[in-house]
Image 1 (cartoon, chains in turn purple, green):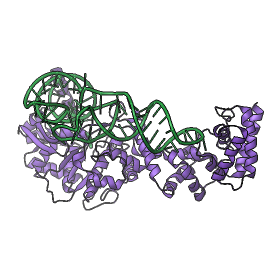
Image 2 (cartoon, rainbow, N blue to C red):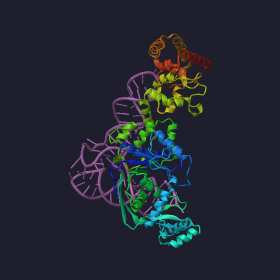
Image 3 (cartoon, rainbow, N blue to C red):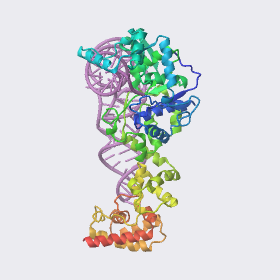
Image 4 (cartoon, rainbow, N blue to C red):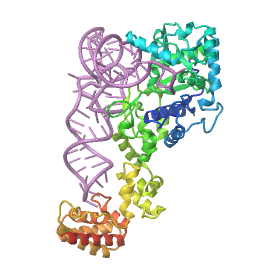
Length: 499
RNA sequence: GCCCCGUUAGUGUAGUGGCCUAACACGUCUCCCUUUCAAGGAGAAGAUCACCGGUUCGAAUCCGGUACGGGGUACCA
């Protein structure tokens, strides 16, 4: 029953390939990975594809992609093999069938020929009688001969585990602590389906045992069936692993997270410009905390500080606002050249995929982009915002909103005059550096008898096409003198034409 | 229906019997900084600790019940 403390920590993530890896699944994987890494143990990836109905051939690859993106690397898995290969359940069928045979031999399980139709009838009858639906254990009383006759007749045969008459069953969960279940409430359940595939209940236990898994980390939906799993272990004479049932993640409306809540899979967050560091950090803080006020952490720090005892039992709501904030923090903490590597692919992507206009030739000049990055780094909340924030440095024809040109505190006529003065100054200004330009333009504002704001706004709009931009003079220098001159001229022209 | 789990500001968390007239963070609002937008700084509002009862000199913390939310009750995982 007890876990040998000296045995190495081995955890696993065992998704079924039925679709995209949901953010809740990612968090389960993260905790599982964290437990392994935290103690220098191993993390195993296993594919549980025993449901042939819901199997999705593309799911496995996308699940791996999500895990890799988050940096949840595995030491053994279907793609890299390992000492307990194969790591895909459909390739391990003999193991489960053998276990089922053993359980039958030891009297812990039996073959059952009850058909799905009969089960349906049974449940309908129970429902009609106002009783809770469930299997009535009728297979226990069938003779070998009956089963053989059914088999010969081509009826489907399953193997069921026999719930022992043991009263209450107690076991320990690392998060929920002592658990107690009344076995009389359970019915004999299927461990081997009629197609020869095991159910989850049998398969995961056989695999976890052979793969020497020390901690079974999984979602809370498994809590009710945990006693079955304990029973199977006992029947097989195997030690129990440590159970770690992690809490649920809910959507904004407190319902189970689903597609309705926006991004559902991990890779969608990647595609929206989130840093895997930030998602990692954020997810770790859902249902766990280091115990003090620390929130912003790098992977290594989380690995070091993680502990099972501090995993919460209560579900938490996924707050994308806070993720956004955290993403901004992680972006700001990044060194420029590091950020450059993240941001370049976004800028260079096709326009239709959020990159710069296709008219801008690729590859971009790394040094030029690097020189612009400090201007926008602290303004970014996601990587994807880089395109809009840097766009006007690359394109020739900016979209100019004539209405916006004067700003709120001026009028077209004044703006036009200001821009003409500015244009003259811009042509002459030497050296062409932010500090110097600022000094010159402040002097100009004084000369014109206006505050800097009303002067700078038209220039900003003329040069960037937007009322919101990085500091003006850094921006002007970044764009370059000639292009700024051209943009000012064009702005003046448009102002005159509209008035 | 039955079984299981949960319940601290809108959200994530801290708190494990007295330091709690409940802390931190996100979000919201105000102000400062400032050429815009951010970032940063300073503040504010926001929680009868789900409710009721019990134990105790003392309870967010322990116990019981209720309510609400969620999960399970499959030849799905």
